[in-house]
Length: 243
Image 1: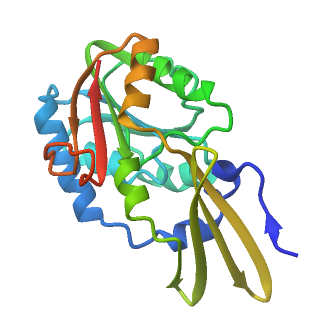
Image 2 (image 1 turned 120 degrees about the vertical axis):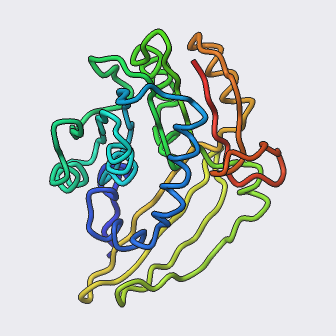
């Protein structure tokens, strides 16, 4: 019997296997994105940034190396424990639920790499945007970097196997009840595991509706990490700037 996990965004992110599966993420691309984004926003030197759902802190650590005062928060205790090893007087990490306003204000709040739309309760999506609004200072910018759902569905790979560190991760993807679901199964030491990633298939129109409800204003939308123009059909990303 496979070990099924209910609260996927807590249980899956806290396993070592999550970090093994995604260990090959492109750090150079992530750093280029942060360079482009901070230049575009023209953030103040030494400005305060909040990295929501920071994981093990790869974006936070790089932003801090650029001279910013960075707070990274995530629901995963294991990820934050790893990130805390990199703390300094201008870089800190905390376990925090992003649907709850963080008790400080910032020059920018970043929610990166499709770290949104995980919740079973759709009202949590609006709560998160309202929380971001409360976390921005008078001149602050909110940034949500989300997948372009239209592109993803047009190019969906329904099934594949990814082998990392000798583990064969069987991945199946489909659209169910407005969510893009990836089921991940694998075996380690003769024990079967099964995890699920579930992300709400939010379109730009969906976000525009959420922004309107939250009382924030969408300023711009980019389609890739070079901040190229967003295209409904061909852009891989949907990077939304708001305040």
